[in-house]
Length: 260
Image (cartoon, rainbow, N blue to C red; front, side):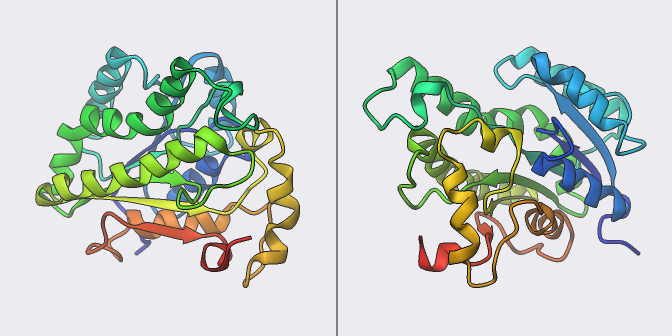
């Protein structure tokens, strides 16, 4: 039996085939899961096109985390499709341009609020919207919420307010884990090293991470390979780590142990 046989997952954040979320979805299908994808706004057409490369994932759900009605509609569609939700991948992040690569004093409070709402608060908002379906699985074999992270314990060059948002995401994960544990729902993050995705390309100066990460990683690092982070997510979705919650699982070649 494969690791995720019979499990029903919602994977957010698939835009193109170089998305970390795409590789998570691909690996989940290989491990026997039933997978639903969501997209938002102008990216919906890209997500639908990319979904065809994955095979049988059904209709892509429209789910903008800043629109509560869309989250409710997605939940209702998933209830009809699956009846439960064993796993949820939060692969959502955005920050206005002034929040990245311009230092900490350039962005307005409104822009920082946008970054925080989409990159941090949305983990709570999306989990709340999907809670009835997560509770069904939680009372049975357990449910798992997994978010994608970039180590929020350090002040990285150019990452600026997104780094603060990720630090908030890590703290939020611990609070959600505490609150949802009694319902049988685990909440964890996977902190990946840099992978060449559309999101990474949008961060000015982020190539500096990509070019040097492998030199610092004790295990080495390939910026073209999303498999290490995807496999970490699969392990957290599976029954292998049923006693793990509120944790940041690093899949970064070991850079978090020594810094850069």
